[in-house]
Image (cartoon, rainbow, N blue to C red; front, side, top):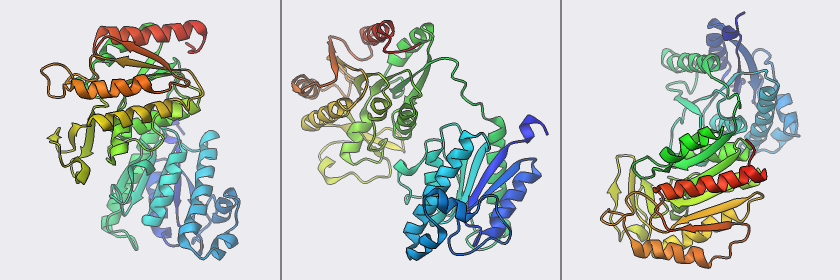
Length: 413
């Protein structure tokens, strides 16, 4: 069997109630020369034929038994036990290189479990969910693995039919195709993780990327619009970066404002937890972003909003909100277990924050600056520069800090 045809897909679901659908999914994978490993996460019933990983093994992996799960008498807590067990086993199989992709089938219960399983697996590992609630607002962004793939399980709530077979067969081909095609990260070079927005707002990535590559680094730039920040945090938490340049912090302001355009409550915390050095700057902290479909909270109704496109509408934080954002940023940086430097460009923090541009607000910037200057900067080295964040001087300062850390052995090449 060739390398491309020997990929093994882990198929997870409640085989007691969805036996036909899950084995149809498995058959589709096998007919395309893929291998299948089945995992049963049922509680009450049993599959028609034995699965490779039984529900008893799943419960045991969660330090429980099926009898104990049943005795709980609550389907929510029962499935959370099975979610813990299946997540643990999936990660163990991945670590042993026994699986090359995972696909999980379910309604709301199965999807709840599926989200945990996908979170347990690293970015780049193919993970597919066939669900009756794919892309539903029932699923909060923080439950999504940054590279999760979902397809609606249309018409398949109870039993096989031509409609649901279309969804299942597509998903089978997608996960196996991904397992065959994915290029696994080789880690030939140390990686610097950087956050930014589009180059119309923040230009530093164009100045920094070639210089960082000259120093022997690979540069991964993440779009700080929620999911990008989540992916950045996930890799940072796994220690995947030699250093981070976290220069677009708008997701923090969005989080404080209650916008869904955020990267979760652990934004700006994971690099510090994994002892990864951080160079931080307040790019675009003046902006507040809401989803195009999201109702604007009453407290923000007094300011104009600009529709950036049909997905995002933007406005600006007021002076007190900028102060609050400054306090939150430093609170998070101070929790780091590694070196942190903060660069404060005092002439502006995004391209439209210049004289004559629509976001130019010197009073607002001064409020942020004033708060930053009075904050007790425990565990943070502060650099204030007389420059705009898109000036060459800002990029030069970031490189100066990095070069110093390389020389001192704080950042390894």
